[in-house]
Image 1 (tube, rainbow, N blue to C red):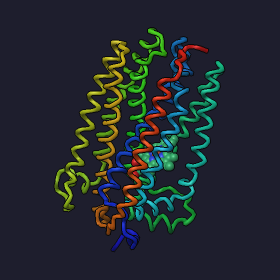
Image 2 (cartoon, rainbow, N blue to C red):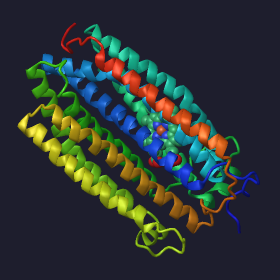
Image 3 (cartoon, rainbow, N blue to C red):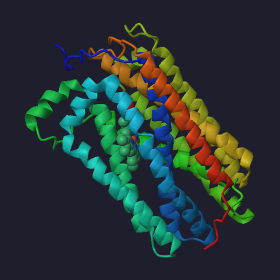
Image 4 (cartoon, protein in one colour):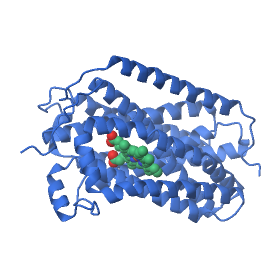
Length: 374
Ligand code: HEM
């Protein structure tokens, strides 16, 4: 029996490999921003709750000031992968989105509330008021949004439960039945938050807007968080991989009937492991040695981005192999490339990157205000 809706007769306007490439690149960047938000926010909340010293307050404020900007990247870098995912996996993703429709649509409201709370958190910190409970509320909401996204991204891989869910309610008001991959997958993203958040602090410690004492504090704390949660992240990754269906494990072992060599997607998993291990060492060096140096940032940032790229490639393999085992081959589509549109898209894409580069350079040239200044 065909488990998925029939394919749209309109052909794809660009090669599948191009959609996939753009999807993986933009989704990796979404994940970097999401992890900075989830991790940076929790660290800022804990620092503002404990208020151990003036250094904790300065660090919490420095993180919070940047989080509202990070949120813009979370959202803007989420739209492209959403569009590419709908093109490539629409038959699966639209169905699962409709089945949990009320939760799915609620993300918009939850997101606006989270954003507002982030601004309130920063404003209260700047004013020297108690702020941790506002930040914690934002973090809980962001974690819930992450849970809903994981729920949908796993439900799209389970056509066998769709009929039962739809019969239960066509309102989109019920969540899917138990799935052993969901919680490990979500916890992997949550653990990644503190890992990437720690690396972000190692990078921040090299900024000239901190005093020497603040730099040592930021590097020491961030490095330790990255080292400890790097190990938690590794453990969560191994857990999430171990609960995947047999078809996925066989595919990564090179035993899938799919003509594409998905074992290379599986190799990205080893790349991820190696990069997290390197990051743990970088974190331990910065954290236990309290070393704040801009060259450490130059290692921490590419390692963090590459880690998320490897993760995204592996995750993409998990999805394609799971879908393939249920009769959905993402590569099996009619393509009639519209090169003029593809060309225009690529020109605008590069121009957009140029504008972002210019914006970053304006920020870099702006007058520096010390983080500790009131
Ligand atoms: C606080 C805000 C957000 C958080 C914490 C967040 C978190 C996440 C997480 C954890 C995942 C991975 C889910 C999984 O596979 O298990 C994810 C994937 C995704 N997110 Fe976000 N997200 C946020 C905002 C958004 C927004 C606003 C959009 C859409 C405009 C979006 C679009 C997506 C898409 C499309 C994917 C999956 C793409 C794919 O698998 O192809 N996210 N997000």
